Image 1 (tube, rainbow, N blue to C red):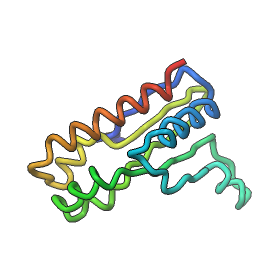
Image 2 (image 1 turned 90 degrees about the horizontal axis):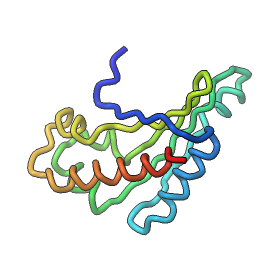
Image 3 (image 1 turned 90 degrees about the vertical axis):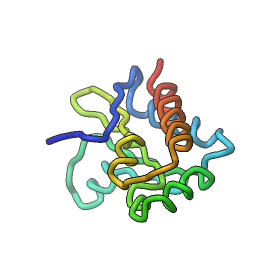
Image 4 (image 1 turned 135 degrees about the vertical axis):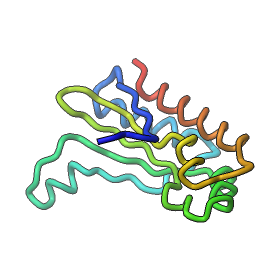
Length: 132
């Protein structure tokens, strides 16, 4: 299975600390708004199934996302931004869509500055969340 367009970073912290740090970083940024959080492990448990720890957080910045959606009609399938935190065999990872891949996937043109800002922000957020 290919992970084309996905950036993954291994965390130096446990699952819960990584997720809480990620959530705090996003919550404390006045330009970002958390829209939804899903606990895939809890959802699996609710139907008596087992799943390794996995949570996803959806968040956005309409000032950056709106022009991207206006440029690529189907970009709304991949926005708002989302970051997945997983743990498998004791390894905690943080994954997100690479904005460069979204540009290609949705044929977004003329939005290089916004894509660079989004890319830089996602890198900064995830690096901080995964650092000890």
